[in-house]
Amino acid sequence: MLKQRDPTANGGGPGGLTGLSSSTELRLHNQLERAFQQCFGAEEGLRVLVTLATTQMLATGSSRTAIRDALTRVVTDHPAAGNGGGPSRMAALKAMMLKWSDGQK
Image (cartoon, rainbow, N blue to C red; front, side, top):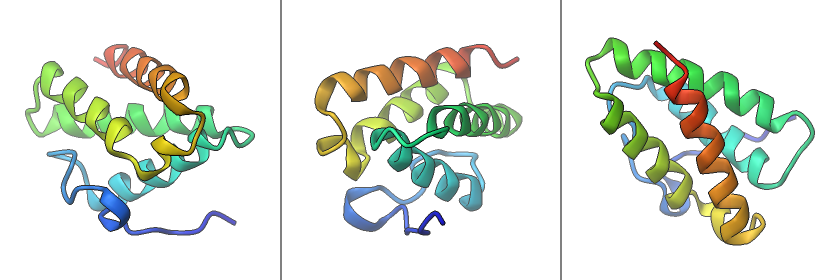
């Protein structure tokens, strides 16, 4: 079972994704942790949440640039970034998330 964590704990910033519901932000934080750990199915779950987050942020008027910046920041600032495979894993997750986000209309 996935342990729920406060996205503001251990270095995450409160309200890091403007225009995103707090529940989606928490789910994104937890799924990113799983993706850094390379858990089975984590990338697919992350894709679904990035799609949801992008849709929510677009609906509140966020620009594509603001969404890309926010997603990049979420990965870079995630506490698991330092112990989840290093810079190469972080770069791979960022690239995937931006690709998925850019695919949303």
